[in-house]
Image 1 (tube, one colour):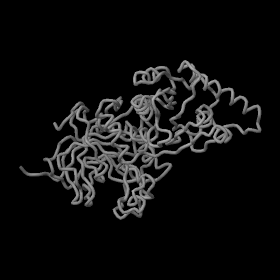
Image 2 (image 1 turned 120 degrees about the horizontal axis):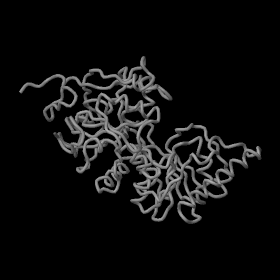
Image 3 (image 1 turned 30 degrees about the horizontal axis):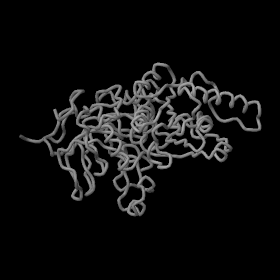
Length: 415
């Protein structure tokens, strides 16, 4: 049987055979803009791997907002930011979540073999970095990058190049698309809720989860429940609230019933500040109504940022923590410092997760305690559409994925 230099999408090369070229969705600088136009399929050479790297045949790829940003070229031009990299190419192959099959391993890789079925997490760093070599959390390394966004050769292609430590066992009960959908959002949520020991979720802890029906929020609700905590979701509609309750939330709050969102008024503007305070107190009471008792959240799971941080810090319990991983409504957030120092609250930033946290999240999925919340599967040629829907906030709750190598949805193993 002769081997081909290029295989069609959904046509699997013989195990372990790496063709010369592959189909991939590329973003180029001259077409930055709406994702529906920025993503285009091209043929490129399959990347070579270094001794500590692995080449994975991608069965399915998860859809995340970071590659909406990549398509727009804003807030960062990810192509320009890599111009000094030794393996620079003038295009971006996105995709920061994947499930697939190992097709090649570097000479220094241990514990992985050709044919292994894996999921991939998106945390990358240089093993030679002094921070990493010291044994410190590699998330604090200046070399840390998000694969498929800050680093190239992501999952929107037939083959993905990753560091070996990024590969984890695929949960055997999941089909390829579900296995591709949860790692970025799930591991991010896991670190936020379990990565800061003094404020790790304990049994009985109340956790306020912003965007409870989204990719991050759906993971946070389930992780909180698995740890014995009590999740209260914040959503934009009753249908999304009911979805959160099915995932294990105690109840939900419809944020559209409140109008005090936005930048915090200056404390000397007594009229405006009083109106904001009235709204924040009403929101806090809504939490008590869900719980059936006057109990404040020990943890607030934040990512909207600018519009919500003042309220999150206000309702957080004394000695509690507001933990944030994004700023989807803006990056400039006002804080009434009195609530931080007098009530000894913590405001903690968090960004993705390390290997141990990714593995812990993966074990929760394998054990059936966290569901990937896959809401829609796209065909490979619908990948630009999936990002356009996300850009326009018209995507469904939970997480999304696109088929790449898997020829049809629902497959749990090699077809």
